[in-house]
Amino acid sequence: MRPLLIAFLAFSSIAFAAEEKVPVDPTTGMKIAPDWEIVRNHCIVCHSPATFLRQRATEANWTSTLEWMQTYGGLWKLDPAVQKTIVKYLATNYGPGDATNYRRAPIPATLMPLNPYATEARLEVEKKKKEGLIPTAAPVVK
Ligand code: HEC
Image (cartoon, rainbow, N blue to C red; front, side, top):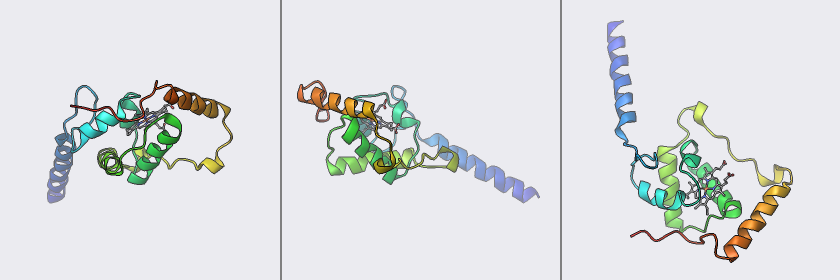
């Protein structure tokens, strides 16, 4: 019984240490892991980081969230290498983890009911983009 208990305690403290190791940026709440600043620079322009920090998803689901925002949320086309870096950071640090945190895949557009509000919102975003009120590229950070 004893070796089992010791093994359990050793394992849980390792798991705890691994959890503790990633420092968190006090301003954004983002994990300071490789490439976090690239993600910060692109992803807090329009909304709070809480929008994505509370989510858990695989690379495929993070990618579809980004594509959804590009279609409906005014997010500009990202350089493929930058998009890959962003998705990798998100899936690594905000991946599915345990099943209770997992976010289901988005419902395919073909199965969604028609939403007049979404259509109006999209028209509004497109109009604002034309008027230059919404950025069409990432800000340049020096
Ligand atoms: C050009 C503006 C813009 C930028 C930049 C942007 N988003 Fe969004 N995002 C939106 C809009 C608009 C919504 C919808 C907000 C709502 O429904 O209230 C949204 C919603 C989200 C959601 C919630 C989606 C859901 O299913 O509920 C996530 C997650 C998200 N964004 C992540 C990101 C990430 C990661 C980045 C960095 C690549 C990013 N956003 C950059 C505009 C943007």
